[in-house]
Image (cartoon, rainbow, N blue to C red; front, side):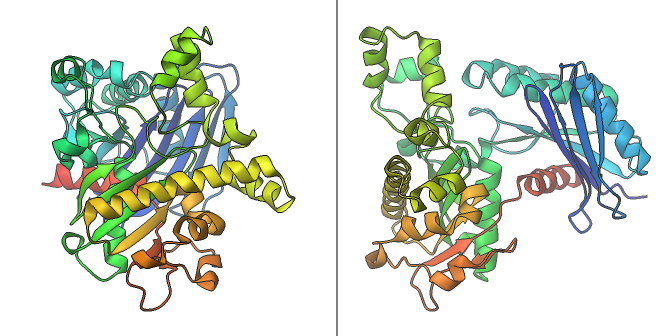
Length: 401
């Protein structure tokens, strides 16, 4: 029996998202989420998809990630999809930060684990949880390939002129300070899917990808390779996001320390959790912001205008970086669902060949689609992202090679 299934794990500090896929046709066999790990009222929601079964929920105390994965294994086994199945080819793990060390998916061994651990100082919120998930899965299936797929890997093709900050080189190298970028699996998937939508090879297409969710990032992709991206050392740099500030003068931090008397932890919390849209207007849900704008709320309108202004700046910048742009692709929660954001982002950029057709833009669909007018010089597309499929695809390609 040929093993064609891949289990994808996305381990957070108190959660585990998972999907089981069959790579013969990229179909999903089961999806689920364990949340509130370590609390009295942990919750597991499991949905089998291979036979149209109903979702099941468990609410109980799940002490740690080991117990969480054991619970996941139990639920999968109820559907005949257990982790002991000979059809399971590998487990693919999302790892947020791979630094410069990992430029492609990598089979996990002790040396790989040690390097991911060494990168914790540049990803203190994510890499520890990712490591826990990998170690737990290895303990459950030590015989099975465990593959790490890194959020940063797609961006390692950036030239040094885009990846370097203009600070002292020795200081930067000593502390591994450079622009790494994130959301790489999404940017890889969407840039490739956009080329497919255009009926062209990724190697022949230049795309600006706009991943607009609560976290948001842009990338300039030339011929299938990233040449610039908006996030940097951390996911804080770049676009205005749900709760993150994005680009700002770094001297603001010194000002808040000296004049505002704020500690580094307080400033970290301010910029990552109390800024962006929620800092500007008290909401980080674009649907609610648009509702408030329709009711005449000036604060919500200002937040939206700042969001769009930053987005336009990056579209223009990446147009200049690429020289020729074949398509702009909107993806993730806001990018896929907010027609007003898409329309406003390209409004006034007609001289660059950018426009949306209002009727096409208003259509809601889970399928990749063009929303630019027929014959437009630059295609404007909505391309739903699929990071789990991308992780599974990369994982399976590696273990089958």
